[in-house]
Length: 52
Image (cartoon, rainbow, N blue to C red; front, side, top):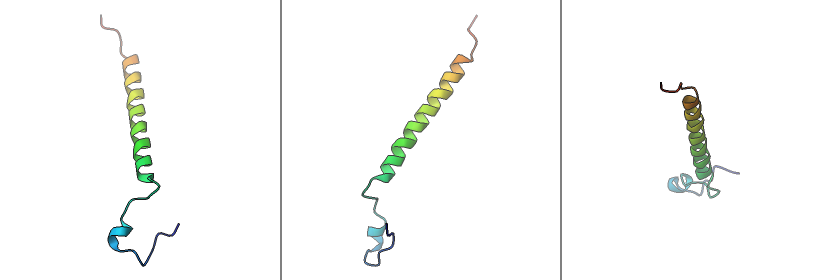
């Protein structure tokens, strides 16, 4: 994939990828963060002692 095109102006060069790779990265990152917090919460709740 060629990244430099002398016939494109500055606005066209800055446009997003037509393959939507940015959206894929954002969605996978969000899923990873939610799973990480769920695991941390689960470990935290399982290690607490029962109230007396």
